[in-house]
Amino acid sequence: MVRAFADAASAVDSRVNHGVTSDAALAVLRPALTKFGFEIEASKTASGKIRRPVLFGENGRPIVAYEVDGFHPGLGIVLEVEAGRGAAGNADYRDLIRTSLIVDAITSCSA
Image (cartoon, rainbow, N blue to C red; front, top):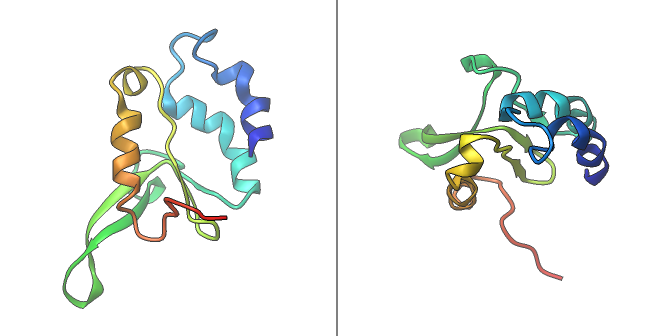
């Protein structure tokens, strides 16, 4: 996982590449992350998005779900990539809180 981000650093590092969007960064990271078993958002269309349930209603039907950039179903890892306005607007804090509500997301571990 660390290697995937290290290999993509020259293309996605916002300290040296101005104007990199989260979608562009995700496109660079997608091939390596899918090899690790991640489901990665493919597009902004409904079929290309990844929705993870948060709250269920009648008959177990999800009534609240969040769209995430990536999810590893076996490990319960939720991935959000922020760039530009998202990073500047402290979206990372919002993402941390929202992720803690997602079903099957691992939010803590113990030794």
